[in-house]
Length: 357
Image 1 (spheres, rainbow, N blue to C red):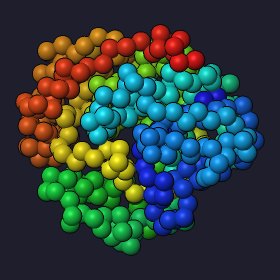
Image 2 (tube, rainbow, N blue to C red):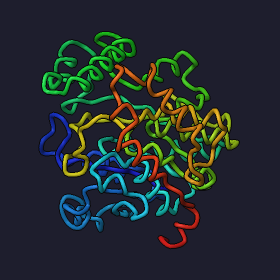
Image 3 (tube, one colour):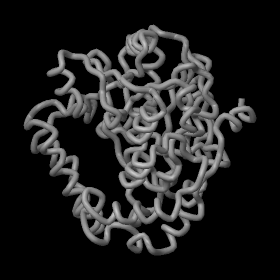
Image 4 (cartoon, helix red, strand yellow):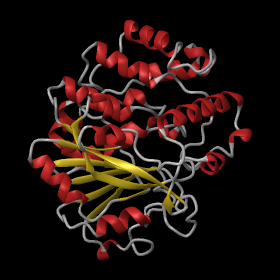
């Protein structure tokens, strides 16, 4: 099994735990797993300023119970990172290039897995499933509850945001109020549905997000994550689930109430890695819809057509993509959008793996 973890956060950015490294809980949880046959691949956007993270302190690789690959983004997959913009899918594809496990598991840098999680995941995979892992939120090192105290702390920075981001943040807070019950634990929105289904269910493709598992073979079949979703960040994993389903991996996405993880809340991405704070390039939901309507399950192998681009613009300019009429940079008619169009990535992950391994 290969655990793929991408990070661009500063070393100590877990909220309420200033002396705990961002990877501290994760490494501790991985080291305690009863299932031992896995590797950890950390694709680090900050590797230039912390190249020795696994050599001595804070994590001595020689004292870990698993192999670690601490690597930078692949040169062919970092265009937007070099512009200090989101490059999440390029980082995920870098991990796929270096993965040696039969099963891949997408992880976050702030999580803590219980010691039997990987055993459960492997058993479900052996039964024919791609397991999805739900999460429960911790803040200040303890279970977070959705109440006024939490909301005040979570959105305390809203007054310092530019107006367009403030509108987006308020909209996000309103959505959370519809998802989480007052004074109840903050946990994955899928969890109550799973409980109502008897604790176990097959998830639709648009529930493929968070801590998701899939085979290396499947990842290479669809040619990885759609890098056209960079330089913005959202629903890249939902798009992956959609394309896996279109490629034939149907009725495999398993949710089980026994598959869950602790996720510590953290501060924002490091400005050392992502310093661009301007408006988004386009809406990734529009790109997801474009892939789906065209049955495009293999991505990064041909360029979007003018018809595709016109559709993405049209869809981006209306709800649910646009919380206000001027949400996107230059209304998708300027330099950033044109740069994105001209930089559409074309590659074959299978071929790139031959050079990396």
